[in-house]
Image (cartoon, rainbow, N blue to C red; front, top):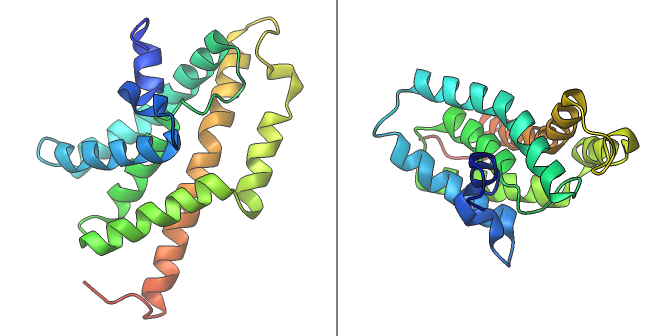
Length: 175
């Protein structure tokens, strides 16, 4: 994991190496880091961190995927971290129960991949021209990394959509 900075980041400082539910452990790690980071970073800082991080994650996740020889290794959790940071950035300040609900929704959408999220995931996994082991080029690495990141962004969008719908229909108590 510590062989390269990219691996350390992609594997969520080891959280993605959990033998049980690495995506969930990575998302929990993201939540903890975000709550700690709120003491040091402003909302504007967080937008830059998440935005820049998503761009960098396309290269990092694609490169680590190439190094490991696996199209979308489950231990790569940088995508979950950044996507959940986006969710938290857009809902906080929120009470703990709402953060827990956001966590549960995000994990559901990321793990089950219903509807469009699953279609996005399958599309990028079926792109044979970016399969690990084929001749490596920067566009292939970036495209593979984008494929790793985009389904988590779709899960984040779905989470935010459900939270917004629940709050506008008065199904969630106001805070």
